[in-house]
Image (cartoon, rainbow, N blue to C red):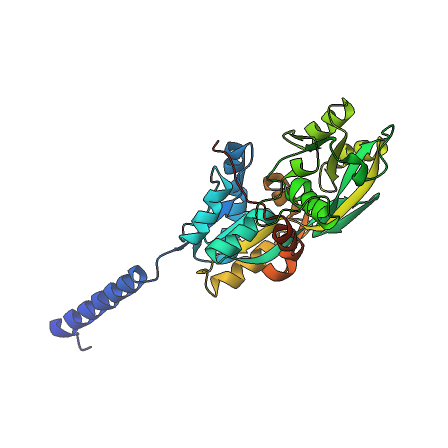
Length: 315
């Protein structure tokens, strides 16, 4: 048998070594892991929200391929808008009014609307919108909003879409206030204006006769909503009020853009729904595709009527 020459053996050895080197170099040259940053509107328990975000990050990473997901919780709504504006976030979970600001100032786009369990009138429904209602105590002598001129009104917050923006727009539609070029002022119609700090607190003010009228919305906890409606009379309503949304930053490109959208839509499946209910909203049902113009139309109309500005205090 002819034995291989030393030169042939050396050639095969160096060829194998070269192939191995090229393989290792190719592995090192693969594209680095892409990073996706999601911002979440701030809540009272931002620390707990940050801790719970790990499950959502893992869920998304499993569906996005070679992408690392990081969820950030800015301390202010403005922080989310600015993060989108300067590419420090690629997408965000937001309520309607901050989303309108993100579209206006950061070029962000509303892509998904949250379908939630809400109560419209007396009926529980699954919708991407809801309504809010002006209510007075059942023993109140007032039969219409017109009769409440100069009286006391309790609102949950000046930053609430359903509890302030839309009710103020209703006052403007009825001709009770005339904002002109300045932001609408509830004191133009009411004698005393209270910002109670939430729907439950505004309801308490009405119950304790510290206010003559307040507002309740169909997306508050159902127990609170039913309690309020059982003990009050509705004078007026406003809506539809757009639900919370997912916005995409202007520089989130394909194919990651579509991958993220479909991964978020998957959160609406019954087997995954609990993730969002624990993380964002206890009444979350699913997401549905929408557009900025379609979903925010009622809010934008109300903002045009009232010229209200989103101004938040530092925490």
